Image (tube, rainbow, N blue to C red; front, side, top):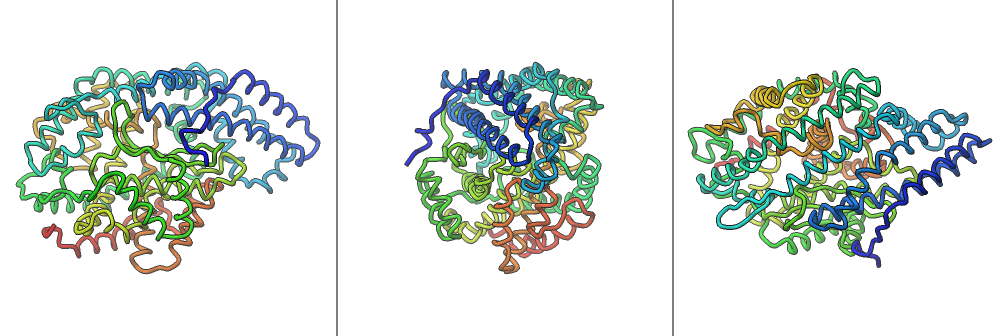
Length: 565
């Protein structure tokens, strides 16, 4: 059996790839039947599978060890060459949407492929290739800067992930010192972060204008493949969050203040939920993995097969180490039908969350990997996040395995944390709308705007005398803002959907697992709102949805005596 370390990487020969795809596009346009065109689609998808699998292999291996010079060079090669590849795919999509046999092809592949292709075409032209190379390099620069963090704390050098346990310390001075040291890294590099972001905003604005958009907002949405909602609907959704959710979060934060026995809740107190300490997994990373195996074996035959596949092929790199990129993600190597989970275990409850969350993504890919169209392997990101966030709740009955006597403490913390997250998520979104509607804003104006929006959605946040945070520097730590503009509201939309799976499970709805499987198996074969419908969930954009969803959650949280934890 092939393990991840045996997956062979071979640098794509971009000239050969271009030659083959251009030849196939020409054949496609000359074809005399939909059957002929269909065969050519299969051949093009075969080439795409190879190139994209190699690109993902490099990304994974580079992020596991940013100090590995070989994969650093390969990442640089791909940063330079993937925009040229995107250009080829764009040409293929143009041929696809203009096919004289489009109706017959749509009958076979569904209209969603054509909708995605049409929206993708709006995001590309030959004219922007150089700009895309610049954008890729700037994002890699940000990743590298984040990975370079060496914070000397308690006599040891640590990266950003390794600072988290200290920021959750039950000792207030330790928490404060740890948070200040963590934020200190961003403050020390303030000019670098500002410069990278300023260049990113300018290059993205330039790309949008070259493509005929007024600014980057509309292009950002198109890049995300959002075919059935727009910025106006998102603004109305944020309004719902402000009106129906922020008051609930303000109340939850006050409960946290009381639990911690404080007169005032400061920013460095927020990571600590309980004076007795946050719920943490009761064993080593290996122990967590063993329990994860037991959990997925008991959950269902589908999850058992999937998780054993992941473990046997070593498709998870879970522990934080020197030179490893921060954060967690799931991606897939289509050539080997393999999802891959990357994380940075650091001894907090996040280790279990990341395992269930990223496993939700991986499980979806595993169930929909047989789709012949690459676009259908995974849906757009807000739909993707439903799989992961729902899996966090679906696995609740097994949380005792990890947290033992602290299981109720963990559940309270997990659910309230998910509620608390949403206003922050919309803060990030509203900020990005401001940034790209005002690309000429200075770094200072951007930070001031961040602080203003933060005060609106997170009115409880008190940065005490921390100058950098009071000036609005918190967002530097949010990689999505740099890497994938407008990718963040997705988490909050998905959270509203995942809450509905939690409600179904808590109310004993026996259909919820079948609903979840149906959603995962559908992969990316439909748009966000159609997938929401397919899973029997309420549309988050519809007025009243948040109010309705938050009721049973508030009721459950109110029924818990959190002062006992």
